[in-house]
Amino acid sequence: MRKLALIEAALYSFFTISLEKTIHDEESKNDSAQPMQELKVDQTSYAANTANTRSQAKLEAQYIARQQAHTGEIQDLKQQLELKGNEIRSLMSTNDGLKSVNEELKVGIPDELYCHAFRD
Image 1 (cartoon, rainbow, N blue to C red):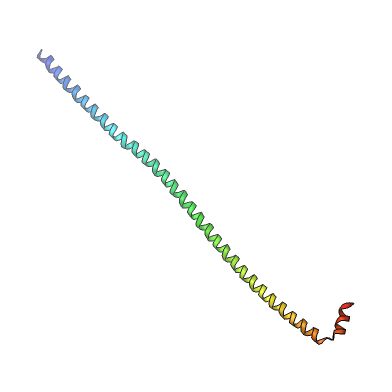
Image 2: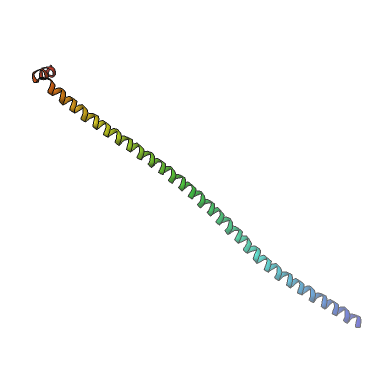
């Protein structure tokens, strides 16, 4: 009988310790599972943020490249406009010079000759 009581006490102690260990393991498992889940979510968020950051950086680089290209085109167009303005001023000056030479020639030719030369 005493042996039986000792065996029962040993079994009770063994099962109690096993139960406590199982409970502790489950709690540890749940505690570690939750941070692992949070870590997975954080990794997903990080990946999404990294992708967004890369996309944003790519868009910003494209914007800057386009802006620089447009700035270069504007400078080229301003330069072309300035050249055309200079060309127009030169042509107007040449035209004025030719008009004055034409007037001088008209004055130097008698009217009778001038009229006959251009009538025929």
